[in-house]
Length: 254
Image 1 (spheres, rainbow, N blue to C red):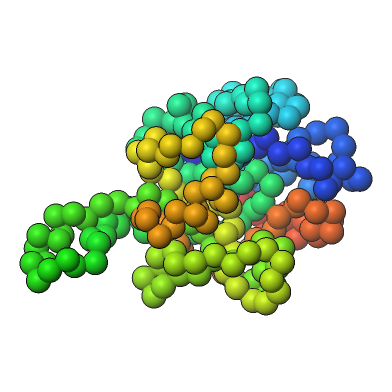
Image 2 (image 1 turned 60 degrees about the horizontal axis):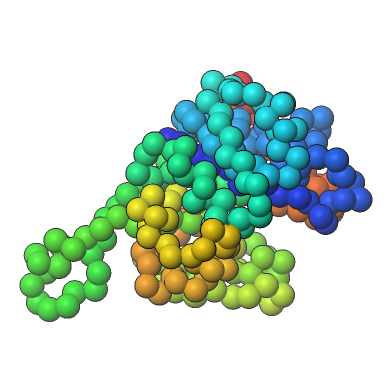
């Protein structure tokens, strides 16, 4: 497996505690946050990671170089802000496979990657158009994107994702609405052909411009997991990560 980590975040909400490094390099218990993600990917058999970098990118490449923990590292440098979608389209030029993982660089989700990968490659037919089921099966196709979900007691900070009984995406709830729900946890399996088909300009959001607007016409499915999740994008969660993340992620460190 190969992966892209979106590691270009500025971390404006963390400026009071982390001011001189990209957000994925913020220290958690004395280690850059990005190391925890790379440990997790290496443990799951990911052999190559493309780091999509921008803000203070030399601090990331200077720390990690060309490899970490047996994982080959390359860098996709954004010379202008491209958003998550544009960042993935630029970085995937360095990915060799037809499908690849994408992770947000400021959150950690202990998702079952093998299950996510398997679900992504389960071809499904569209709803039958007539009684000829055999003919319908000839139109089976892989999913465009498979999204890892985490159910939380209050999804107001993130918004929530709605799925049907088969895990297909059927709706999104905006941020700011309190209540329990399943959130997009920032771990995806993405089909290259799908990304290449997107007509968007160079800068766009994978979440707002694609997932939330095009779920009805695309093959998007989700896998919900109860694994540990944390987003270090705000000071209180960053502080919580200092004690929780090292304990949770210890099993992945080699």
